[in-house]
Amino acid sequence: MNAGVVKSAAKNVVVIGTQWGDEGKGKVVDWLTDHAQGVVRFQGGHNAGHTLVIGGKKTALHLIPSGIMRPGVKCYIGNGVVLSPSKLLEEIRNLEASGVDVRSRLIISEGCPLILPFHSALDIAREAAKERKGVEKIGTTGRGIGPSYEDKIARRALRAQDLRYPERFAEKLKELLDYHNFVLQNYLHAAPIDFQTVYDEAMQQAEELKPMLADVSSLLYKAHCAGEKLLFEGAQGTLLDIDHGTYPFVTSSNCVAGNAAAGSGVGPSMLHYVLGITKAYTTRVGSGPFPTELPIDEDGSVGYHLSTVGAERGTTTGRARRCGWFDAAALKRSIQINGVTGLCITKLDVLDKLPTLKLCTGYELDGQVVDIFPYGAEEAARCKPIYEELPGWDNSTVGVKTFEALPANAQRYLNRIEEVVGVPIAMVSTGPDREETIVRTHPYL
Picture (cartoon, rainbow, N blue to C red):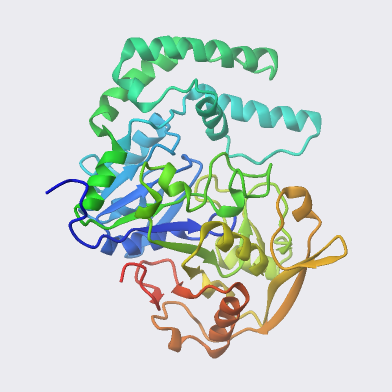
């Protein structure tokens, strides 16, 4: 059969975060891979993190797609991901120590730009320089993500395919280090990075990585034509998107659904359903505007409740997340940008026992009422939330398996979110475990 003819009705789903990341995408991706033959990560780096809870056991992933926890599922790292060889191998070894088969199922795009030690050195030195000058920091993870993407856009990046050719790698590395060491020493007043150390380490890592390198774009196309279902897994969240987020307090990649195509090398017509993951309240890590933010350091306050009951600390950095009420106006922006088909509401159980809930339906901005999140950090920082109050519920929602079994006020809360944003809620997560999930509309069925 011609490889370009689809054998059977293949359906592909894109999972994206609709807030500032940390929405619980990992659990949802893991759950959906029961119906998928391949999971594709298409942007970001090891600044992202997914915590999965399967049978009560926690697993933290940063680069490897969440589908790795499902035996037999292929996992692809697309060209849109910036790849740290050292962190990827560390993650592989940790999973293998737990008995997970990784290397036979993990496929890495040859086009991935590499994150090398000088990228994280630049990242850390820049944030330190801002602090010395009294300028607000971006709040990066310090993992070299931004500097690596800069090299990609400047067309000077070392890519995964360069690991195959030691002489070519050395030549490119020398030129790249000359440039970055000049900046580190003369502009950022930081220590330079040694060429030989970086080169030797990279060549050692190359021996382990080369068997996993492949033309991911072609493999995904062939899988699609063979009728395999694919799941495209985003990192971070829409409001951290480099183009559409709260710039400059954003990440360095496109987190939106459309980038699933460019970041993995597939055509847009191969993307059929966009599932937007949305926390039942709102959180943010790092600097930047956050209209519905609540103080989290007052014992007994709503912010403290969300922070502690929700265990709101970053999977990758351990940083405390800022917490606030649900922002439907921000969600509208994400729905618009991503073309969201259906929503998955996570962490509903964190709202249990709160007597009253607030839902932000819009903002007062410069004397005008707006019902959608504005572009840019400066405008968002001037937004004053307009709230609608809803009654809370006393009964626990933990582990509830059907929508009808939820407390009446929890149902009203979710129904009101649907009404305000205009997109149906397809799924609800009622706990961290894979089985604690309500399904109203299955994205694959």
